[in-house]
Picture 1 (tube, helix red, strand yellow):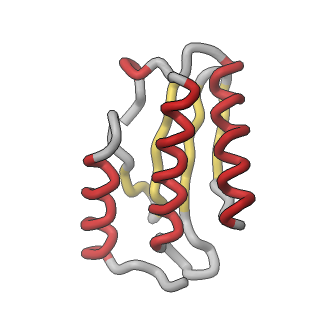
Picture 2: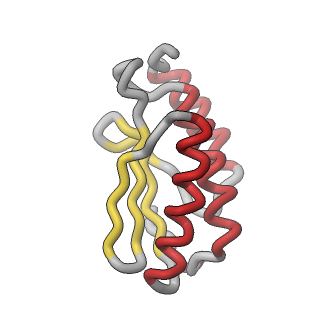
Length: 109
């Protein structure tokens, strides 16, 4: 798996964000998004679903959870940056978020 260059990242990011209700961003050389749910139970349920996808892919996010918020950061450490694997996992994360019905009105960009 190789690191994507900035042009490849821009193209993949635009494609990913066309399918989402709020945008993924590049922050500190990582593909990043913060989600806000109605409560801790929904946030944790979301994290459990993402964990299953991550295990199947053998590609694990860095994430931070405080009550109803989950911040996810994706980077392929073996590649030394963002790779197609990060965008693939981000797509699966979007599927997981739809299944737990977050408070869509307050997704954090």
